[in-house]
Length: 437
Ligand SMILES: Cc1ncc(COP(=O)(O)O)c(C=O)c1O
Image (cartoon, rainbow, N blue to C red; front, side):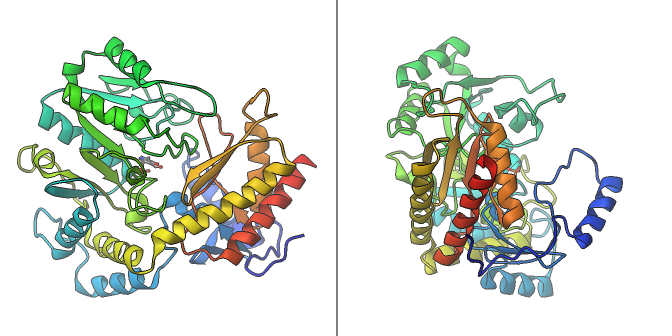
């Protein structure tokens, strides 16, 4: 029984207003742009979305992990209005503006890497990955890039090559970028890998003197919310030091407070050389960045990196407020609170449903892996889709993840209240009953 205080389903989905817009979409929007929710958004606040037909949903997807401080955080909105009254665009490299520089200062101050740091801003997560590799190549004067199983780094040519999911992300889009080598990942629920295995794989794929960068998500996002064993990231640091390549942490999904620390790597005894950041940094505005050791960031020649809209002033103003909110509104503690509460609901569900094979995550970045049964651990993509779909129709948006599409994950805004979490979890429980019933 769902006690509804925040959600409301008053039409079939899609309702008539949404359905009319979907009709137009079918006619004019390119077919590959499939959409997940069966409704069209009208407005959104915090973790709540209302559609064109007056239905209200709890959003555990947070715009695919972009809304750590919630939809339309008051400080973000105020800063944006102020910025609109000033100027919208100059291109930072044509006529520079202070918010870009201020954001670089604030981001460097929040980056737990010893020594001088610098930052550069771009538009998307994929662009930040591309630029981290460019910077590492310029610094090392080497070419090869090491990546891992289960990785997602974006959809541009190099980032897509670095991504480890053929369908849909790479299907029909080859040839891919050269000099990208994939190493085994210690997916603890399914596969044991040692530090020796990783070094052995590296040495068999490429001579390490040719490696410019190793890129890894400290907590794997799209690949299924995988938290590495504690030895893993420090072992990668040792390899980077031994062979002289740049260690890049892709914190596009795991960064900006989501795991209860500013960056997820801070949970481990390790420091990277460069970090890719995006998603929640801009709170919905297109913004990404690379931040890291000044000596490496300064390596490319003048004007070698950038982009017309890179670090747009509106996005930089939003990001400065996002970071201030994290600091002043205790959102890192909130992330831990949200994660603990979701985890205890998941664990309660797992007592009833043995299709829940694994529950894992760090802070509010938490998910469950669904299997046919706990003995065979066969991935259960079909059931995962059914549950996510049932939850959508009952009023809660839960994204899926994983190489095999069998992980339900939470990327909710950190400002979600306990009562909202509980209502969302009651919806999830009802979705389990429907899908398995
Ligand atoms: C870890 C990681 N890197 C890179 C990206 C690509 O970001 P974008 O979609 O903004 O290009 C994503 C997107 O989900 C991501 O999760």
